[in-house]
Image (cartoon, rainbow, N blue to C red; front, side, top):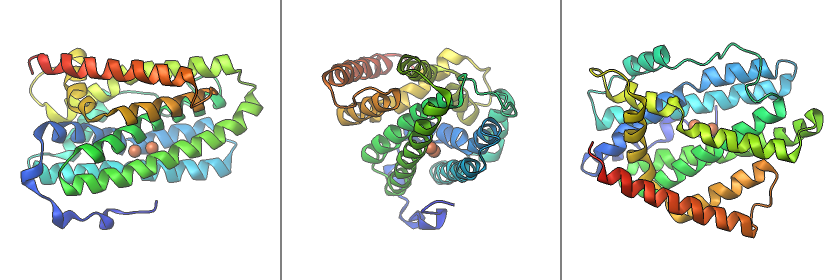
Length: 271
Ligand SMILES: [Fe+2]
Ligand SMILES: [Fe+2]
């Protein structure tokens, strides 16, 4: 297990008066995605079947992701005692399918798989850092601080192995950039929208656009400029570009403008 456990969380400091119901809904969704980390670890162990040393790091990584899910689920149950995590996770697994048993990387190469994992960890590291700064509830704040530190370590883990596999797989810089952009685009795919649905809805049928919008409305407003700037620098580094150049600054400004516009638009839309 990682550098912390659920015993390190100050659960006794939970303050229901500081709970934001919209944050509870996105935390429930995040708990399902994180708890599914074991399935991703299983898939990556298949992809890196002949790299036993890395497999051991991957299993450790998967355990940490599962712990993130367990901590968030426990907090969500404190905030909403009616939340049935086991039932929600079963709904999520039943409705969200990826072939986790496949030993073939969806990115075309193992170096490409590492580029994609760096992008995912950029997203989670930025999200939990932003969440830790945005929320008032002390227990959730502590959980997010722990998770954010883990996610940054995960980025470093995958970045280290990406560099090793770049040499083995001869991945060009252009291909690396395309893979990073492709994985960024997937941020809008079904996983988070379906997790939001499985965690919060039991009566209606799934509508991707509706639940993607509801998830984004709860999640995007925690970001501030410095989170976006750092995330773009991490994406640039994973893609093999200079992380602190002029292009990075322009893109970060553009991304921050998009985030603000999107938050304003989501706030104007009915629930
Ligand atoms: Fe995580
Ligand atoms: Fe992670």
